[in-house]
Length: 47
Image (tube, rainbow, N blue to C red):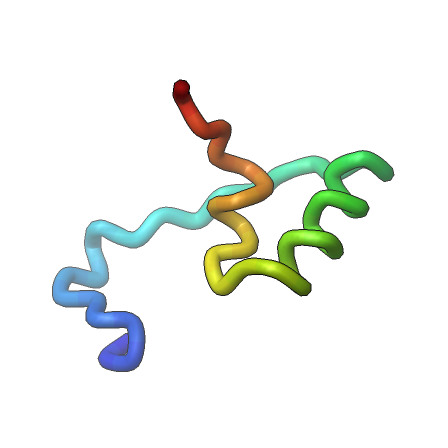
C-alpha cells in the first residue's frame, strides 16, 4: 500500500465488473499503452 501512497485503507473500494470481448480488447490495448490501465478502460473521459 505504501507503494501506491494509500493513506487510508478505509477509502479503498472493491468493484466487480463484467467484461465482454470489446472491453477485453480495450483492456489489452490499454495495458500496452498506459500505466493506468483500469482507469483508461473503465472510467469514461468527459470532454
